[in-house]
Amino acid sequence: MKKIAFFDVDGTLIDCTNRIMDMSDRVKKAIKDFQKAGNKAFIASGRPHAFLNKELLNFGFDGFILVNGGQVLINNETKFLSSIDKEFVKDIVLNCEKLNIDYCLQGPKYSYLKEGFDKIKNYYKIYDISRDFLKFEFNIDDVDTLKIEMFPSNEEGCKYCESLNKDNFNCFKNYPGEVYELYPVKNSKSKGVLKAIEFEKILLENSYAFGDGRNDIEMIQTVGHGVAMGNAVAELKKVSAEFTDSMKNDGVATYLEKVLL
Image 1 (tube, rainbow, N blue to C red):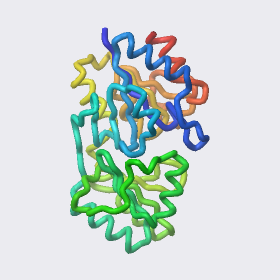
Image 2: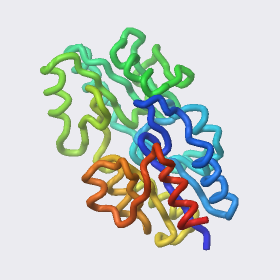
Image 3: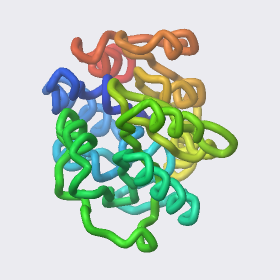
Image 4: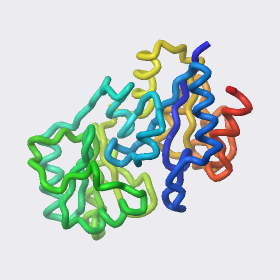
């Protein structure tokens, strides 16, 4: 029976904060063997396309659930896209510029920011973000924004970002540091995962997901087999039925080798 597995990126396959920018050979082999057995392997990440490194893009994944479910790519084709209203984006940008907040508008292929945004650019260097899919000159009317990341420089800016966490939007710090990410409540990894499962015509009971962070909780609860990494946050471990070793100890490979291969 064909299976499908979804892999979070940061803390599951790689660890940029500790300069582990590529999957280990053992993890690569386990995922490839999983695919060779006729199964499907997807990335499921909060990252936009522009923030995926070449190793992930060129590995041979069958699809990508990106920007927390805002985009679903299967066989290099966008099957689902959920953009933020452009007038709302313009309002956010205007306020960010008034409050000296660096921002990045994350789109389906490219992400957009100003050349002078040194704080957020330096932060992205930690995550090995290439400039290949970054645009520094753009017309905001031409940008389809799926998620906005904001890097406030003071308490006033932080309060503004936190004030956006209401109604139809999530806005919170998801990574170490001072970056806030804003995206529609209606988008989630779990919804993107369900769209991929439906497209691939695979039974929900034969779906697997691996994650370590808060934004993986719904996905872990949605699939047939939700697997928490050994380094997962406590909130995720509380809702997970299955567990594996940490990212550093090749937890993905450990599970695949023992359970699925």
